Length: 119
Image: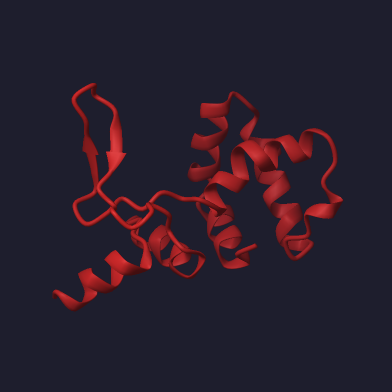
């Protein structure tokens, strides 16, 4: 578990609040679970019942499987749905995730590398 990203999420609770709102759960409980995880070094074995639900539905999507926006960002398809322009699997790797949150620019390593070398 990326503890650096957990710390960032605690400092920027809006990410947690938005995800909790989308799932329909109390964001204060989700923030409390992030604090617990940070204190326990990311150990999930201490989570019970509803805490596990909050982790799976609110916190985990902010830490794992975060979608790469690709080289041109999110694009709208013919039906009005938003999709990634990433052609490399579409997931921001753990090593790039903290930087992605800091810059609010969610790109996988390949597109981040390309963007930095095109400057």
